[in-house]
Amino acid sequence: MKFRTICPTEDKYVEVIDQRKLPHEFVVVKLETYKDAEIAIKEMTVRGAPLIGATAAYGIYLAVREMIENELDPSFIDQAFSDLRASRPTAVNLFWALDKMLDALDNSSDFLRTSWEMAAQIVEEDIETCRMIGVHGLPLIETISVRKKGEVVNILTHCNAGMLGCIEWGTITSPIYQAIEKGIKVHVWVDETRPRNQGSNLTCYELTRHEVPHTLIVDNAGGHLMQHGFVDLVIVGTDRTTRLGDVANKIGTYLKALAAKDNEIPFYVALPSTTIDWTIKNGLKEIPIEERNQDEVRYMIGKNTAGNMDSVLICPETTNASNYGFDVTPAHLITKLITERGICDASEEGLLSLFPGK
Ligand code: MRU
Image (cartoon, rainbow, N blue to C red; front, side, top):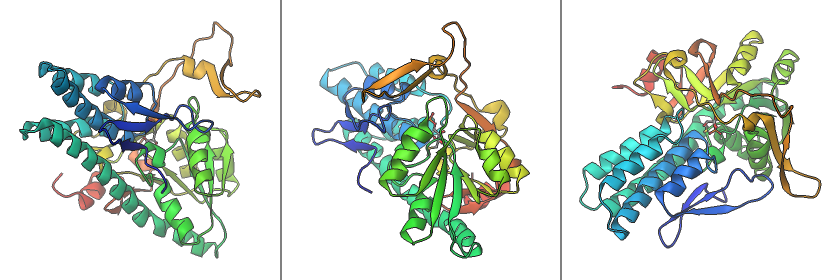
């Protein structure tokens, strides 16, 4: 891996890639205040459940630093926690990371050092977690490859659950990268993932960098490809997984699961355990689904023929749009979950077999 999605700087701030500009421009942005981190999450300069959590963790470090340097009241830190908590609603890693930071600060007499070290630990743990998801997911791809006598394994994915949503490796891309390293032939169908096009912009960018053969498809093509035997396996990410195994992921994931079920194609979800919300059971009723600005649907952003980033209206000026960011795939549509501890059923028993005591 050549880069990380979030990096500490020498002067102890933090840098992130502005993912809104990919794949056309690689721009690095420095976060110097907790507000910078909050805005980066809200405006999706950074996105993807694990990276949102890591950015929020560094946001708390930045708040501690601002408080000390500007001799502010400690209530400044409380404000940072509450602003960061409100930055995006669905990915539970955000709340998990903030709780971890709060716990660490509650038990510390050196806030600056503790918050810096805990944010770094969250980052390092995610890298190892994603690597292990690859270790456990690789045999799935290997088995299909053997069954197909070494022919290409076709994997369909939705949104971006690659390294750009994490720190390194990514969740769904980790088994894919490890399969490629082993010489297994893999091809990825990439859903464009309207409205923000994380598939075409980010997943295609990553797969290109890693020289993974892939083809971009419109969001509605997956069902057709599955009906005609062009998909061997679906792997998607998740922003929040309930203790019964329901999964919230980018809008449109549910429809892929339905199509996979109808065509008897295995549908796997790759997840770091940091996306499990052990406090809830019913995904449909209990997972808050983000609603974003309608202009994300009404406009398309891309590079124009003059080579500049541009935004174009794709509906009449007066048309309103709805913009739900996520949907919930019920556990019964999921073949298995791939976690850092192994593969399990999408059920309470399955999850508890890997995470006893929860
Ligand atoms: O709105 P986004 O881009 O943050 O949504 C991201 C996803 O839906 C990913 O699949 C999920 O966060 C998993 S990232 C490993």
